[in-house]
Length: 161
Image (cartoon, rainbow, N blue to C red; front, side):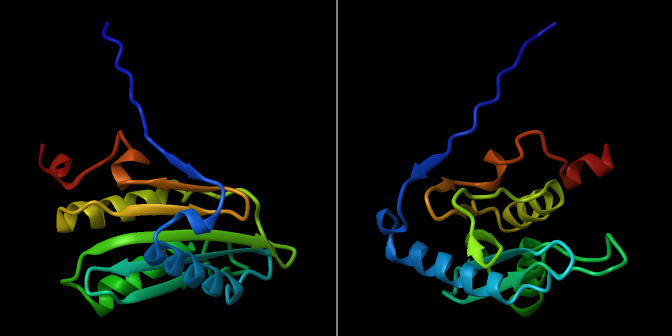
C-alpha cells in the first residue's frame, strides 16, 4: 500500500478591497448576475462572472426548473455561453457568489462537482490556469487553478485507454 497526500492551496481574504481591481470588478459582475437568477424554488441565487483573455466579462446565473434536475448552475451557464460566443478565447478567471433571503452569503460557496469538471476541461482545453474567486461578504477564497479544486479528475485521455 502507498499513501498519497493531496494538498490544495487556498488564499483567504477578509475584504474585496484586498484584491486587485480586475478581480473586484469580476466579483461585482457575479453579484449582478446573482440578482438576476431564476431560482423560484430554492430561493438560492448564484452568480458567476468569467473574465476572458480578450478582457470580455461573461455573466451567468443559476436557472431552475420545476422538473428537477432540469436547471443549470451559474458556473456552467456562464462557461457554456463564453465558449459559444468566444470559442477560441481562453478563460483567465471566474468569480462565484451566492445570495438568499435578499442578501449575499457571508461565506463563499464552492462550485458543484459537475461545474468543477466543466471548468477543468476548459482549463485543459486552452492549457491555461483559470483562477477561481469564491466570494462571500466576510470571506473571499481564491484558488490559482481549477485542478486545485478537483485534484483526482477525469480527463479526455482516459477515454482512449
